[in-house]
Length: 318
Ligand code: 13P
Ligand code: SF4
Image 1 (cartoon, rainbow, N blue to C red):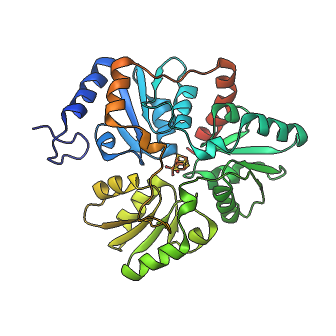
Image 2 (cartoon, rainbow, N blue to C red):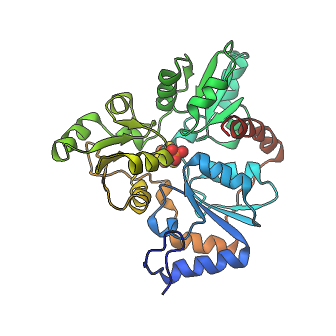
Image 3 (cartoon, helix red, strand yellow):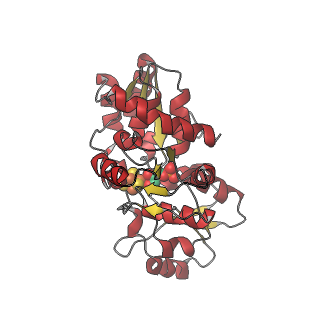
């Protein structure tokens, strides 16, 4: 019997998962997976985490190839820090509504009209947008990054207005907000959460900063997906309502098995999946390792320019 390589549980892996592990070895590849990936993928990954942890893992990867089980901007980030390595994404269509909301041409036009603005970009944006920015941040380090921006500069925060508004409140720093949002996180409503709280009155509400303000203001904690793990492990509470993408529940159940996690509700359904994150399947992961395709390709000038704000983020948040 094959055991789960990461947690020692007696859960047998499927034939497809075993094939992935064999191909990974053959290709000398590492598999990096975001917390929102399906459990089948999380269980064969070398590392599962949030955007910040994944960016550090990508920067430190000691392998010939990186398979990124997440969305396109995450795989691009891995390529920015690893130009010589093959970076594979199981489904090239796995995009992100936040990245789509800020096209590079629009940001370039804004910068041309406002040349002194200091641009802080949430990592959920394209490499071309990163190339136009001063520094990158994730939900895990946004506060630290904003606190490092020179006090005499006007900040433009792109592309997530919700994360921007949250970090502005946290730091007391005013900033202009790009009007982008995550299509999945804005579906959570305070009304639906309150209705669920009637069923689970003891449960703590754990929300991602991409949620809207009313949801964030009424949550017990607002944090990145990785910080959710530590919060739930260290809390005395036994039940948690998780206001983010449902893939998060797999990781939480594995890391805090004695606790109960309830998927956050929207007004129209009981749970919430990011359609882009869920485009990756174990079969597509097997296929991309077998075929060494599809791979991230990037213009070298764009990559070099995008590396500067990304490296600044990695240095500032150490
Ligand atoms: P985290 O960095 O908190 O994992 O968030 C990434 C993301 O895309 C949230 O929707
Ligand atoms: Fe983008 Fe939202 Fe999906 Fe995260 S959950 S990848 S922000 S669309």
